[in-house]
Length: 207
Image (cartoon, rainbow, N blue to C red; front, side):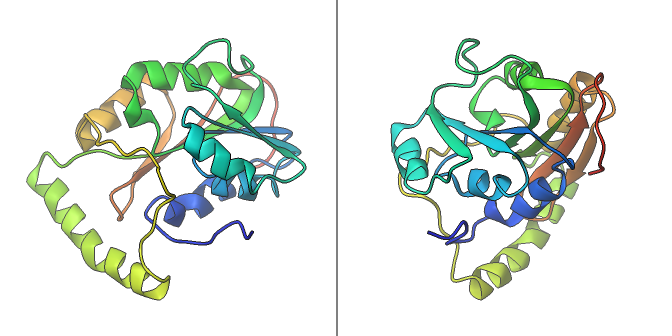
């Protein structure tokens, strides 16, 4: 299997995640790994990769594409016993954290990250202001054009879907409070990206 067999709004931002992996990354964790497409890509950037998802169906699909340095675990990342505390140099979470209380999700991701490690979130929010609606409207032709070029918008079979309970302004404010110094950017295709480096430790490489 190839590591990318379809396109959707989450897959579209995988390059942002991969570009943020620091040089010399030893351990990477993909939270809410789904069918394992991103974890397989991370395996080219890190010595070892763990993908975690609480969906049995998603983990079954992910294990079908597993390579030698990728391990898939069926578990809830919010469970404090399922994963190694401060055990990962790099943690990614794509379209995941809105499935749980926001502060709890962020706190848990921070706890999993090793000192000096890097967190990358690709998240979702809902429109609240007129400007939100204008920006979202600009995404429609971009989405249709990309879908036309890439064979349509698709998703893994059985992937859990949930809407965000927070609007763009709330996410921006909450992340600024919870992750001081984070680099936040609203993206065109109804996503935002967030990059944050945990204090402590030593690390080379940039976002």
